[in-house]
Image 1 (cartoon, rainbow, N blue to C red):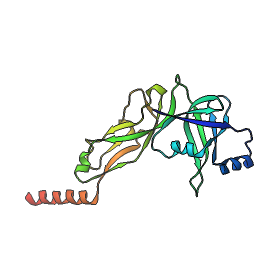
Image 2 (cartoon, helix red, strand yellow):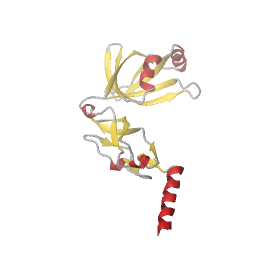
Image 3 (cartoon, rainbow, N blue to C red):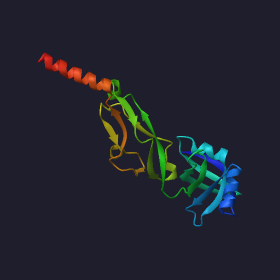
Image 4 (cartoon, helix red, strand yellow):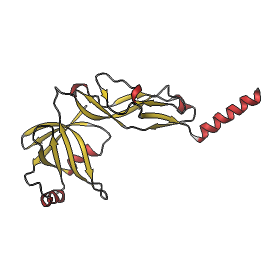
Length: 197
């Protein structure tokens, strides 16, 4: 899994006024937990956007005034109108302990159902996994080559080495939807067969 390095500044004043001043200065209030005592700090919004506006998942290494913390992003609060990040929660991770993180799904192959006129739909772009840091892939590759019309792949059918999938087993990850054109072709085919008999 890719690593992103960011610099942070410790926050001593956690009041509303101080938080407002931070956001005005284009700094985003953050909190790191999982390290015993929670650490409050701020990060430059531009730097943080590299992490927020990407389909990829990163292990984040924070340098907060000389102290380095390894973490994963847990939760982001965005402004309802401007879409600017208001607050971000991070969870500290270590190499010797398994932790939960979302990993992007990568689809490969030309599905049989798509060749027959269907449309491929990726319902879950990321899957929640539990794993050790050394076992985390950059993405989870799912081969859809044999996926036929109206067929789907559920979480329960997937298996990745050294990873525990935490999503519901019956959650549909990817499916081939029947389009109007494919449905019409199937019906026409059925009508021709009936006529031939």
